[in-house]
Image (tube, rainbow, N blue to C red):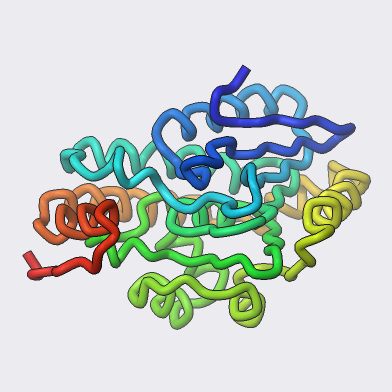
Length: 256
């Protein structure tokens, strides 16, 4: 049914895998639109959701830079809005959501994990927001949700520094809940999710709704993020940063 998603259902639990392993599960507009459609279908009978990536290398290794490179500011802002809307739906999902970070979770991949209530990371995986190295900033909610989860100082370290961090560091700063072994990663995450799914759903809904209050603050922060994300697509540094990434060389920024 979906080209870029793999959906597996259990009783009161749905596992959604981003299925572009040859591109390290990178997000493009089509993937985001399929995620939106999948959430719409799942909303008819909400279950606990688990998100992961196909293959053993990446959860989601970021947005599709080749597809973004030559975007106009308006196109970039629209892409940002698409990602924000989808990830905000995950954030507001009535029941718990779980990110099974089975490999690289960079840029949009980190933001997908941030939108979830629980984040479990596999031994050896890395996570972070390296957009600054491309001459842009996070555009799918990272500037709001990362600060909310790890605090302003750590969020600045990750976003302004742009360096992905290892699993143990991610747990140390509270970015992920736990590190799970490679050999049993998927099954252990699913067991946690099954425990959540077996809890009283009315109480779970109420608890999540109370914990997710301040929706106006989220709305304003996301609007500001996508506006500035789009504006950066007018800069020479964005052009150079993405070209350098695709050409596998260090960028030469001129601050223009």
